[in-house]
Image (cartoon, rainbow, N blue to C red):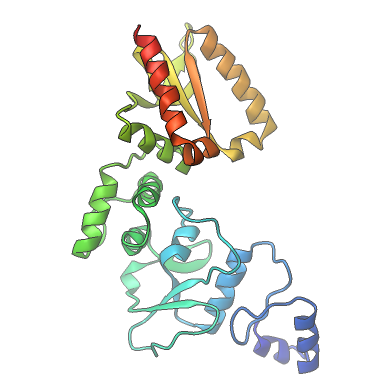
Length: 279
């Protein structure tokens, strides 16, 4: 809530000071947020928009609203990124990062907030993210219908997006899958198929593999944390893996730690499996 709203409702300035002493934060001038909000990201963004009327989320903030991949984990100290119409004062405000030159044609609403479209967000972040982060971002954008050329691009944006787009694939279903695929491709171990379906003799599909070499029945799976946190999915996955093994498949599984902390081991495991299957 804003302090103006609180005062209009009969809250005194002394009571506002008491709230602040009890853990209510002031992320921007004239706004209060209750302690430990259910969604800290949304609370911070709403606070910034309350004191910056006519603004919209852009950059990394818009990417989070669109649930795009390739972004660092959100932390409380991350400021909301907002864009305001041209002609506004170019002074920065506490509790947000302001950009200028809002074009209404670039606006959409996402999770009840005004924000840049996916196309404009990809363009905005194209020269900010590292290449692998940008590929993750574009993989997720492709899954949401984004297309190269949806918005005019600056030359440097076009170069970066084309480079990432050449490595992107809309079939990826998580940032871990994207990073694992990039790791294998750069090692010369290009998967023959992505999201490959395996069928029983009666024609029923019982498995869909992240990456596969069907001719030698080798599968590579990306095991994300969210998968392991769901016991029902975990048990179901064990049944599926047993069925794959009985059908003659070799299944290699890699976690986020494997891909990011010991990539050479991951490559060695897949290369060894490919060599063994070729003997």
